[in-house]
Length: 504
Image (cartoon, rainbow, N blue to C red; front, top):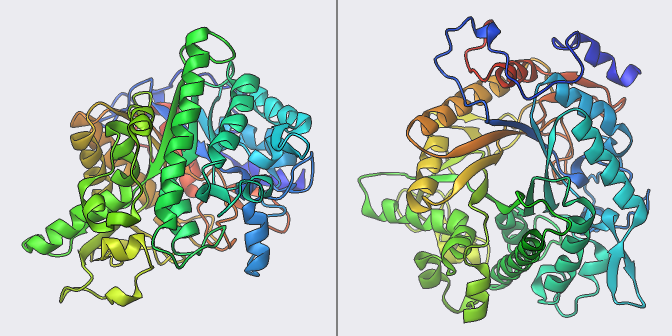
């Protein structure tokens, strides 16, 4: 009980435990100027490897992140937030915040187990039971599950058994991912309204197979990040085809269910808008960030700047592959965004980056300096890559809608990289200003379905426990969760659908 003593201080604890989706606007006193639709999804997010812990329990076997962090001698997430044991308390925390949706991922190596005699993985009964119990607990509190199949933690039993290259570099991975997706859809398809196949393929391909700073830590080739992305797109589309077949047949999955992918993108602004080279570089940057994945998913082809600059490094789709990948989003894009950069060619006089210092492959092909933030951005105290620049969020939303007007947008991650604080005023500012941009974009006609805060609570941030993204503060010694100032504000907004929260 001591670990959750912080719950007693939470503003909403005295309210009814079971919250409905009905919004109570009484606290705005009828003067809300910035209201959201009653159907707007207010969500929080986590990922399996970052929060679950229990890496050796319930039949779970190692993933590439278990191995990578040990090889690099960096912190691992053996315990994480121990959500494997504490998920009921954590779901109660979500309810206190009035969120309607929870976006989380399955651990592939928990849900599946390898059978050498078959040369494939099958359902792990203990893993199935854990996720079934978690989903039923969410439904008990009227919180809808939004599930991601792959959030960077490929099982070692796949990494080591797909032949040359391993992991996402070998085409055999597509069949293994389909086997995994099939189990997930069969076991939980009737319970889950929205699925996402992958989370941020740019991150795990560019950083895991290009820069080498994420698992599996590969670097030094011109082609591997592109090959990873290509196989990811085909694996995604194959799983989507399977899901749609099940949906049409009325077996296992909801007829109203949807499936998509989560794509991340920072936004790039020309360092000097009067310089044509900077304007073009910013366009190149966006194509190497967002359109690398979104263009194939919508149009069946890679974006033109990538085709021109990457040349033979970039795989090509066969006609059958293009037809499979094209249109493989159910009219919804999951969009993650954190920050904005100033963009100039790496060989320009405005560049602070030597072209020769760029990572081999995609980064060198892109050939842009994309490090600096706008001068008036609010810098993070813990993450050099992160700075708050709310205008960039609005510009990104415009970019997506202008270029892909057929898609609705579910904002699936956004948040502040903060210090070890409860009263983190920078975090509060981030959510207030970024949600104001969301509201303004909706007023302009951008079709946004909901907003997801990253993250529900402080957790393992891929090699470190120092960055604090949580709405709830976590003491990593005791695992006590305490709501931060931003959590109290976010809960009020979710309750009332109004940004104008008295007292903040």
